[in-house]
Every structure is written in C-alpha cells, then in structure tokens.
Length: 125
Image (cartoon, rainbow, N blue to C red; front, side, top):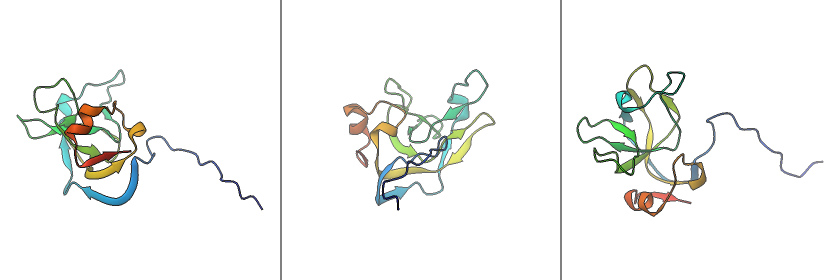
C-alpha cells in the first residue's frame, strides 16, 4: 500500500488561486471586460490570466487589468478574475471575486503593499 502523496498534474490555466473557501463573495452577474483596451499578442489573442486584479474604467464602466500607473480608473482594482479569458472577439462577461483569500504567488501581477492597500476585501496569503 502506497501512503505517500501522489503528484497531481496541472492543466494549463486550471490552477487554484483561492487559499480558502470559507469567505468568498463572487460578483453578481459577472463583469464586462473592455476588449478594446486589451493589447493583442503576436497571435492576435487578447488573453487575461486567471487571478488578474481587475479595475473599472471611469469612462465606460467596463473592466480592464490592474495598472498601477493608470489614471483612467485602471489603478483601482476591485475584483480578482475567476478564470482565464480571451477577448479577441469582443467584450466578454466573466466571473470574479469581490471577497476572497487568494494565493499571492498565483496572481499574475506583483503583489505589493500598494495592491494590498487597494484591495482591502481580498486577503493575499
């Protein structure tokens, strides 16, 4: 009988970002991502990774990835993206977490004191 833990394989973009399932509040009806504000890669894809802090643009009310140097609302994140999404075909509505405890190393941006201060409802573990 083998009692040692077995290593699990990881499917691309199917990693867990939540450190706890005790206190979670998801965004009701999701958030709309502004595809026009997302830069395309060399393949034409506009991919936003799971766990990305998202901020609402003041002009349109749509969400974009957190940008610490932004002045258009993108500097004030309020939601953590629930899954990876490609918005190359236009705006997309996706789920997000307003309140959660997340694993800092799995967030696709640097988790620093400034980000933690801007997201008081998210606990970075």
